[in-house]
Image 1 (cartoon, rainbow, N blue to C red):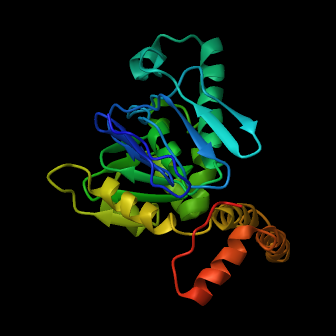
Image 2 (cartoon, one colour):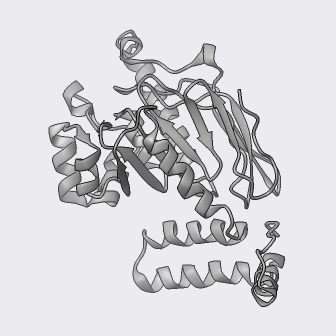
Length: 286
């Protein structure tokens, strides 16, 4: 298992088998994966991620034990399930009675919302299957990249249910209402090329022999993000996310308020000084 980098601005990677999460963060999606383990993410920095897997394809997800809490003003602690407590697959769902299903799905939704609200850029790398909850997790990330051979879709209507982890809300925001309705109503599964054509993903790659083309692209994107000012990255994400939910005038006011948060920072002064001295800035997230 690889060690994770912990310095501010470092690209932290921790690997367990083929399941990898990368600073900035990059979540590898594939068949039979689920999130587990724990990690610490500094509040204003694309930081260190620990071992992780996504939900298994076909709707599997998390059961218990997920939580996030602010330990200090500068630290967000996120905990995931250990392997022995991993989430259910469809065979487990069949065994649930009606009273168990609602709370189970509520916990899935809470986990995905936590991912969506992380104060660092998130990248979903889809190299295998992202069906049902797997795609809902990817939709909660800021950026999605996929191999051309990947398969993704919200297939819940085939099971006489609907997406319950935010899919009915995030998919229309990503690709538009009409296309989202078509995909959800049909339970259609898209490959990487088709997903790129409808705007579901930002980049599509031919799969390589190692089966990690999307993951490698996500790492490249993460490395592009890491040199930037951590405070600026946090408030830029906040401005975009909140601004997309309101009218333009209100959105511009949100941008102004977010911009104001960068003015008193040491990083802003460091950026100006580094530009003057023609050197790489040394940001500390302050």
